[in-house]
Length: 124
Image (cartoon, rainbow, N blue to C red):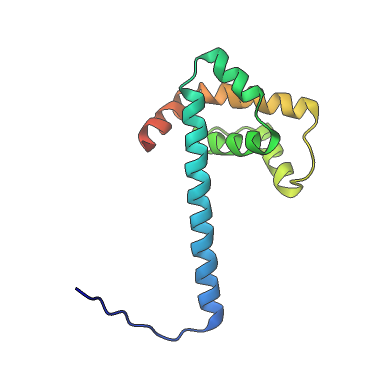
């Protein structure tokens, strides 16, 4: 069985914009899939193991996981928002020790939040 496809000419600017949207969607889905794996691994651990794993995350992975869990939880923490905004504006800058400790503590607390646990169960 063969399928025929029709092509049409469209302006290059439109084609480029559509490709950018497709690439952004694919990147978002890849990010979501990667973070789901990390969060599921963290949730499968006991509390002590989970806390140790959270505290050993490198900064990039910590911030990505915090962003993902923060969006899942639906909470409205100005502190988390500020940390994520700072890291987005200047990704090369390292978090201060207090910001890093707070981010790890907040991530650990959010992982134990019932809304995150139920959201992760729904996504499976």
